[in-house]
Image (cartoon, rainbow, N blue to C red):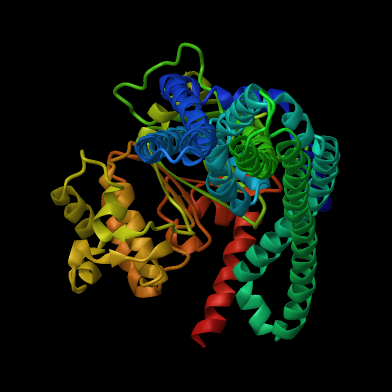
Length: 602
């Protein structure tokens, strides 16, 4: 993660509340507004039931205990017990519905994020670390869970409790209410001071956590390099330093919370002390007057004061949830607003009865700005032809595959399939007729069968086994204990490079494409497997248009046409014998590989 990334994240964390972000977050709750309304209704009831108990206690003391009325006292006791049961019953439904609301909202948000990620062009993934994308869809979404389930709705509970307590207090005795609330200015000042300090410390915690995650991701991925060059001790020292900064930031954050909560408890105790001092004096001095303060009122006010400061502490916790949510939502919406998408035409054309004619006309392409990888590329591949593309590393060979499949859009020129500009073809329709076998094969966790048909219901096991037989993959698959149901670990860790490549060939064939692209697909295969695959390829290519990007020139000698790329331009075109006769770039490449082969076999 670059310094700019840290800076932008720090700026994001500077806001504890952003009305624009909150409105957008609330839009995810809108489909479940009936649950929100029901939860708020339950909140109002639960908030009222708590302050009812001190009132009942006051009545019990003044009207029944003081008068030795045992039957009345029993009635009040039953009412107290009933209020507790009712509150517990309603609290159950309130907790269930708020959590249900939160999980439904998170489900929708995660689905939207994953759906958006799949729509993004490869250009986005070129510039964005995978770890950061995963964090957005997991950690950042989870951080919103508390906001949706116990933040937005449950904050009403704290507010209603405070309002109900104030209403009961002022109804019972105005003077004692003012005395108990005399500490409120100090509490408000302390809360704002805590909020400012907590925001600063929270920003530091998230910043150091981002550095820690970035460092771990990078060095775990590059662990082989660390081990080869014996850098374990040096990297451990660097990690310890970053880890120490993160620990220090957390301790600082804990310090402010450790100060705030006892301070609230202290103010609560002071308020109780003031009530006892003032109220107790009033009770002693006015025992015979009509409006005298009673023991029951004094006892109720002590309970009310303790209850009043409890939601104050909870609101400070909600503030922490709000900070986390604002930071996470900012990053999530930044991802969702990213418009790095290859767009379809407004009225895309359908590819029907595909023949497989490919035309490049004056194509220019750059991954970044005007640094062109391909320059004025023009060629035609007729239906059923096999065309090889060769050239040095960086010549632009793989870029031709990327733009033909519309993983990237070209800067200038046109590309046609059967006379239709690929920009006018729906992307999914276009890619449905193209199969690509890459050098770096990616296998998913699952089994052999699902890695060939990619869980496509239109490709049954019979078609999977047939494709595997054609490419020769069935020989090693049948030797596995589970055969086509054999478990495949993450990225195919339990299979050899050659076996993974054979599976990718079977995968391409199973989808029965009209256009087949082999991107240095045999470079990781041993000589014996290569000979087997070459025979299978001859069968594969019958009736199909094929583009073969090859590192080993021996594998493309029978191609109908060979295109030689050099620094993004077409320098030579012809078949194998014609290009050798020119004594140009292709001839030099062939001679170089021929000499390398002689050295290896000698």
